[in-house]
Amino acid sequence: MVALKGSDGLGNRLALRVPAPASGTLHHKNNILHLIGSSTEGYIRFGVCELAVLEETQARAMVGMPVTRAWSDVHGTDMYKLQILTHIIPRKPLFGPEKLKLDLSLRTLRHHRIVLEYLPKKLEDFDTTANLVCALRDASLGCHGAKMLHCDISIGNIMQKRVDGHIQGYLIDWDLSLDMSLSKKVAAHAERSTGTWQFTAVRLLEEPEDEDPPIQDRIDDVESFFHVATWMALRYTSHSMSGSHLTAALDGNFDASYRDLTTDQTYITEVRRLNMETGYLIRKAKFSNPGMSAVLGGMLRMLRERYTDPEEPSVEDRLGDVEERVTEWQKALTRKDDALRILDDPQWLPNLLGTLLGNESIGWATKGERKVNTIVTLTQ
Image 1 (tube, rainbow, N blue to C red):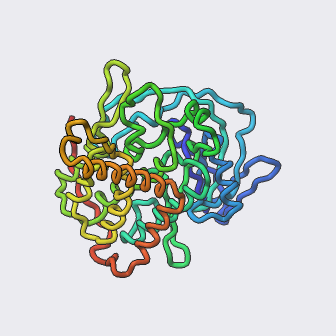
Image 2: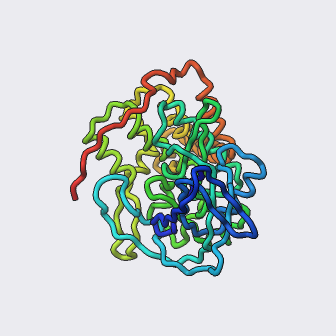
Image 3: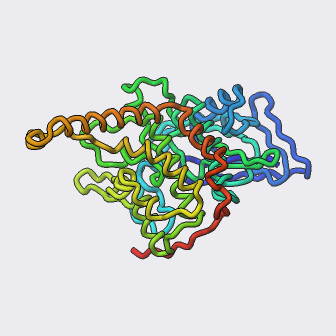
């Protein structure tokens, strides 16, 4: 069986079903894609970067990247100017009623189809927390080994399957990716601030302090992995939060937003930034599995430094113990610089997750089974 994954860029899955004999085959001949096989589904995709990323990573047999079986541009079509949903606006909350209208923008996209290897399980289909972290580790290897910014790390874009008895994770949907070799000047004018609202880095969703929008970077993808891990842990692992408390916490951290009436732009509220700065949400949850706590704590320890702003001692402060205050300020600056340098290392996240998985003293088996936590219906 061949599984095709994709969408039309509008959030719709456009499917074509091809009747075929029980034993299916796939052909890519004369630059025309022919699909023959039982239960074969095709989804139209729009994008240019994705195919280039998949071809390049497949040549290097990279962990965390799916194998491309076949591909082809759709014949008789040119580049399209399509009106599509801008991902920076929340398309739909992960639960509860839709709160905001969707904004539209024009993007030039290319119409093509890609056939990937069969990936039978979504990220949510994990059976133990250790296997969840395995899938995240492999996806992070694929992300940072591709030398591209993925720009849409989310629970829907990480798949998994079991190979020789072990879970392997795969990062898919590279159609929003950004070439890191582009200069900042070029990147600033590219179609970038994209991603799934609930898992996009905080700084990309906040109201900017100046007119220049933030430029997406590698650490933004790392932060997205943290938000994915936090969501998965809250929804599907054992912790102390009740249904109503959990629902409110998820809504506040992942969906809450406001619209500026002057600019008509939508921004994230302060809740997620405060949780990043203080670690309150993951502390309050009191996760039962030590491995999950270690993963989230290890990631947050570095990522929280993105949102610290060490202030130089004021004149009033200098009237006290000047030397001590200046020393603390300098230490805070150094700590932030060190953290940002570490986070920019493409091997940091997969190495962290791999080290924690290999630590037998952590106790991964302790309440490590998948558990669907109850959420309640939100009302407007």
